[in-house]
Image 1 (tube, helix red, strand yellow):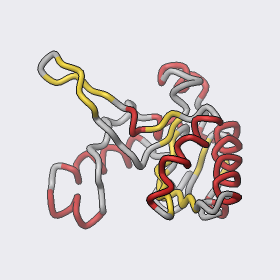
Image 2: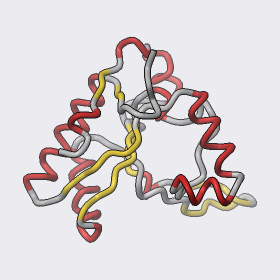
Image 3: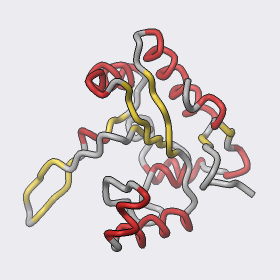
Length: 154
């Protein structure tokens, strides 16, 4: 059984892209520390419940409203939430990530009252350029995930 609350797991091909991106960032003096990767639907539901409670949200440091279970690339191990250090190097880290085909959450949009408005999640990178969520779900097999915890702070 996958321990998605204490370890970090990704689809193997996506993990390779993220690792290459992190190594290139490191070569330029940018540290990328991944704190979230694969999340089961149960864990996603727990985050959604916590979001509704301000004390829980603050205690767990949840900065962006989580997607519903099954509606996130995290649920198919094709998303990571990292911290970029130093923070002022975020634009360069984003540029490098996009060079590997990663989609940045800072470019997200949503529709509010019929209008498209920015909905940035600057802590999120995913595989939403190569795959739709539906395609990623078809390819997803939890038993194929790789544990990337040990290189999360490269």
